[in-house]
Image (cartoon, rainbow, N blue to C red; front, side, top):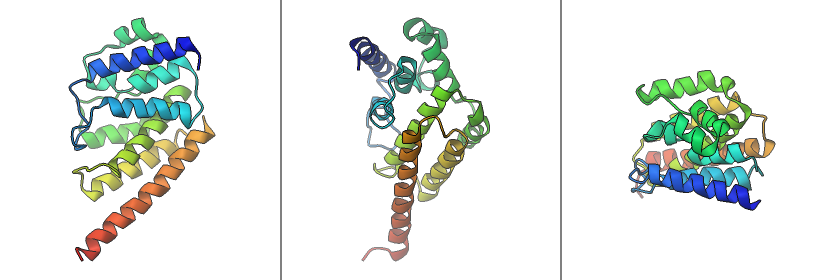
Length: 191
């Protein structure tokens, strides 16, 4: 990775860390939110082999408009219009109820740009891995619903990077196995 890109990625990571500094992943034993953002950027690079500046910056910044006081114009000035536009595409309207936001992700998935699609696939993959790994106070039904929503969204946006598609498929297979084990543990009860 060239030095200029690495510098811009670090700038975006510091910006995101400051904007999200008081946020923690819900139910994740208070893990810093930045962990998720770094996982997304890292997977875009390691799994997807991606090196596009705007794509990688958007990977780190993808939740900053949704969850902080950052503005689209602020992102455009600091990280470029393309990065800001990708982040805007990925931003849910947090004034809407949770289930409506998830439904809109499915309905509008086909409208995402190629770069936004890649971020969305990796975001879904990392979230799935987290909700089936970390101690999370979600009922199994909510975990299963998130998994199914992620499949519905991703089905509409695949094809931009076969390596990311394959990683998502591996993630889904792994999550379904974990879900089956969790349901079995409940059914069989304590021994």
